[in-house]
Amino acid sequence: MCSSDLTVRLTAPAEDLRRAGGDVNRIVVMRFNSGSRSWVDVPTRPGLLGAVNASISGPGVFAVAVQVPVPGITGPNNSDASGGLAPKLQWTVPTGAQWYHLQVIPFNQDGPGIDLLVGDPDQVAAGSYQIAAPRIGGGNYVLLPGMSYVWRIRSSPSPAAVGITDPVWSDWASGSFRTPAPSSRGITATAPAEGSAVANLTPALTWN
Image 1 (tube, helix red, strand yellow):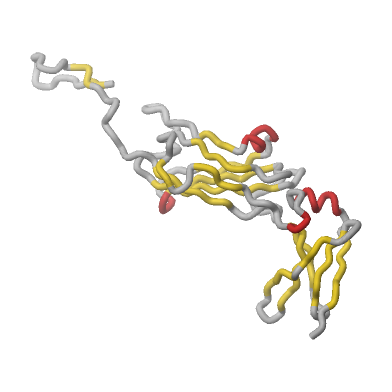
Image 2 (image 1 turned 45 degrees about the vertical axis):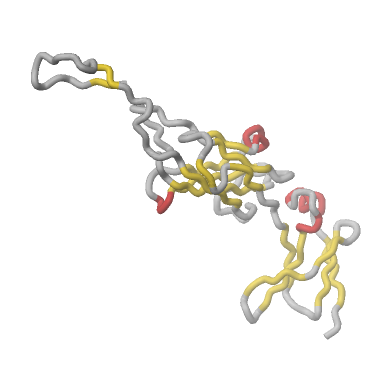
């Protein structure tokens, strides 16, 4: 079957290119496959004057899609959290990113986690998130000792407000880490002093 060229002119080429992170090869043509009921990529090449060209073999239903760049995990990943119970999550920020959606998920959903949607320009550009360490006896137990966590990040180039179910997000980039095992290091007895005598059979025991 002979192939022919399909030229698709973009209605907002500058905006589409921005959403694609400046990479015109991320603006793609897709064809609906009625047999599998799915969309299939068509070989595409950049055209002139805000257009993309595709090689097709006949009539069909076509669509243009913008593949949003995915953040790149830089750490931690598949390792112990270097920050103990306060690791710093880091990733590369795709060109044109306006939002990020960050999740930290404990193994088997056992315990608390993090689910953040952030659109502050400075925080988005930072490409990192510092998890706060817990205050012993005071709360904020976001991470627990001796636990495995998966964390994942995705970004959106949308200049307007977005929700987590809006179709303007990149794919997820995922990493993992494990927090240190529980330890008694750092605990010191204060009273009664070692080797001292107590006045009764129900002494109060205190420690730092």
